[in-house]
Length: 390
Ligand SMILES: Cc1cc2nc3c(=O)[nH]c(=O)nc-3n(C[C@H](O)[C@H](O)[C@H](O)COP(=O)(O)OP(=O)(O)OC[C@H]3O[C@@H](n4cnc5c(N)ncnc54)[C@H](O)[C@@H]3O)c2cc1C
Image (tube, rainbow, N blue to C red; front, side):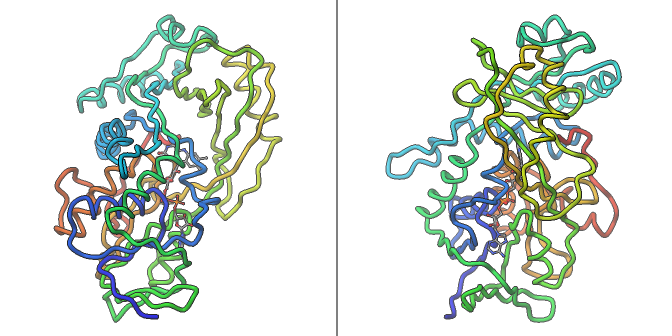
């Protein structure tokens, strides 16, 4: 079978689906197909994520991307309505609270000044003020915290379905096949082939394959510095049920926790020495031996809890600077990418979708300048180093 499309998107996770939605919503006159090998999204990073969005970053481009994202997610359920039925992103704006001890307080003050200068509403709190937000907190070793009340989290599955359903309704075709070959004629893209042997012709292929982005790069004959790395998350039932909602809290150790529906707690922590590779095994000992002591120190009533379940998903990590690679490959005309999002791709989907739509339709960015995240920095070494990676 041979088909012709104007844009072929490899990967129907939140990034690919946001790009597809934005293209059609921006009245792109061409045809768009999204290829997704796993329509259940069982192993996609999107559905395994914590769904958080925050504006507390250290680089201007990441702050601007999240400012755009917060505004977009505030009206997401309505904007993604299909036939009068609202989407179910369900944005909970309960805030992001970064805790600080003496060691990381100076950096937090510096970041606070920068974030404020870009118009982010974020407050530096003393320990006493922090206790007003979380009365159960142990503040013994803390100097204070940084709190952005308008940040929060959404339901990752509901958000992804919202984008995909709206994209379909606007005319995007979803093909549930695996892409196995990218076709090129010298330095120009000409299409792709799926595992069914079907050929799709196009002068534009967009790599949105998340943790599998480097594989798709190899199919096109280009090397992409993105590795899949396991990240685990857990939910537990605390012995005491709080009568207030926790914001998303980031401890000084990097461990994060927040309330989940039903007042259970969701938590996670990156293992810095985690090797790269596709690994979905859940290590319960890591929760018991490493995370639980940190949780019980920070919220003493967490010394009694019941672990409900854990899961592992994959970060797609750009090993050069842990930030996304967005735009067209400089040596392969028509080969676009939106990859390498580490732990912040869910929140970057709205701005990246808009930016990629502009780049493909108009050849330049308008709403937001995403050029600092272009592939060129792999060649120039002009990296975008983010100091607030969770
Ligand atoms: C535990 C955890 C917590 C996280 N928490 C947050 C958070 O709080 N906030 C945040 O912003 N981000 C978070 N993230 C990161 C976020 O989930 C990702 O950055 C984001 O989901 C990336 O979306 P994506 O569409 O690029 O990738 P994916 O969702 O993985 O989608 C890529 C898709 O491509 C498909 N695919 C791959 N290869 C092919 C092929 N050859 N043919 C066809 N289909 C293919 C895959 O099946 C997959 O569905 C977290 C991630 C994890 C693992």
